[in-house]
Image (cartoon, rainbow, N blue to C red):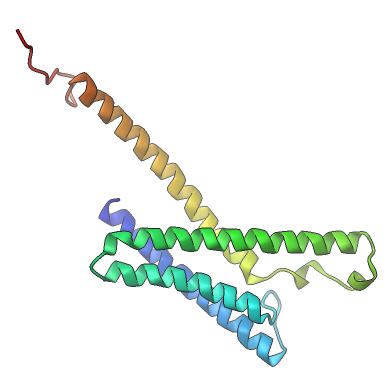
Length: 168
């Protein structure tokens, strides 16, 4: 991975660490105090999960600053995957509550979709978009490397001139 791409990933990891840790801390504090605001309810466990994901992103930044800086990208990828996976779990929970409301279950008479719109859902949009971007970039790089490998295997340089010595 080139240095410029790694720097972009680490910067993204720093931004995600800040966002996940901030929202995680807010959810824990709101959970302890019994309060919450729109789209950030009080949830101690949900806040702890967000803080864990933010810590993984932050660990990537710390690794980048250390002697093994080239490993930082792995931490950013893991943080992104954790964000998306926990988002999917939370989305299933939201869908189950919506189904219960739709079926007219007694406990869900006053349920609103905003009750289950938590930071875990909307924060994961950023890592998901980044992972899709990294995936398409990686595919393009792989295609470029495949073409270069074919040229080497055929014994040609960039101009198409043969680089193999003719053996007699």
